[in-house]
Amino acid sequence: METVGITLDQVKLIVAEILQLGARADAFTRSTPLLGSVPEFDSMAVVSVITALEDNYGIVIEDDELTAEVFATLGDLQDFVNQKMAS
Image 1 (cartoon, rainbow, N blue to C red):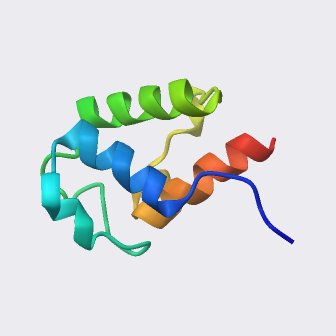
Image 2 (spheres, one colour):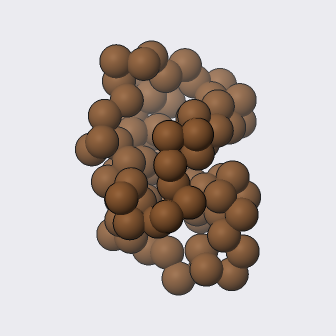
């Protein structure tokens, strides 16, 4: 059974574009830590990434849903978006 949702590459592309990471993002995997590990990933970047995800995937993310766990790793962010898309 195929699941419909955002792929890891799609999440990586959005994060890389927002943070202007260039080729650095090529090495990112599901387990790549984000918040607190990527210097460019600050509070303004979080807002920009969330806005891009909402705009691109037609989801609405409420402020109270945003926790550090959502941004712990690239895979955690992907899982969160897929949960939002499924609901």
